[in-house]
Amino acid sequence: MKGFPMSLRRLVPQRRSEIKQYATYRSYKRFLREDFNKRCGYCDADDKFLGAAVAFHVDHFAPQKKFDELKTDYKNLIYSCRFCNGAKSDYWPSECHLTSVIDEEGIIDPCDSEYDKHLARNDKGYIYPLTKLGGFIHRLLKLGLTRHSVLWKLHRIEENLNKMDRQRDRLSEEQLTTYQLLSSEYRSLIAYICEYGDK
Ligand SMILES: [Zn+2]
Image 1: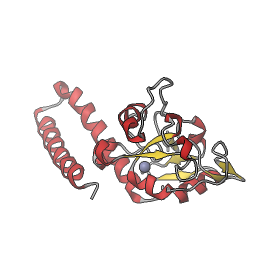
Image 2: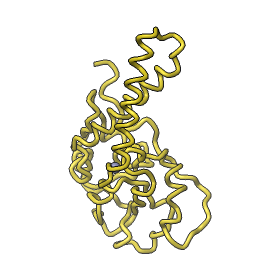
Image 3: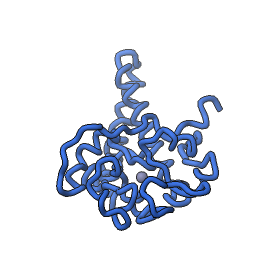
Image 4: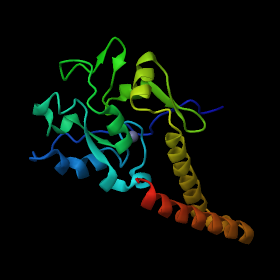
């Protein structure tokens, strides 16, 4: 199918280069949220479907258990959904914080565009690996779960509804009624998911 495989993400997150030093890593969450476009760095889930910023975590790329000196280093922090953060846990393949991959096993900083060379999405929104390292990351972060496809589809429905909204002047009365019904059903579904999605 045209356009597939798709890249896992539309945007590669970019950490700001200048930032004030804070005493706790949690203080960086609001900056990370902006720099990561309100999405999980690892699986690209939109935070609004998973309880928004309150339910999102600040992950330490090189784990703080092993590299305490990087605990509040902004370059080492990732805006992450709780599922990816939990799955990754304290995993690290080496004794050096700069070595995140050994023999095609490891993890890549999602702010590096290299991340997208190893993982992609199919036409159903499922994430799948493109390389051996991608396969390792896929297993480590449980990126094969249906959840990732469902969240991608929700985002796509919303984009299409927004597109229709911009074209509402051109819709017939019947089309407009159908659009309004779909839009209202979608919004009540999202309100439900956003309230209960992280439980
Ligand atoms: Zn995630």
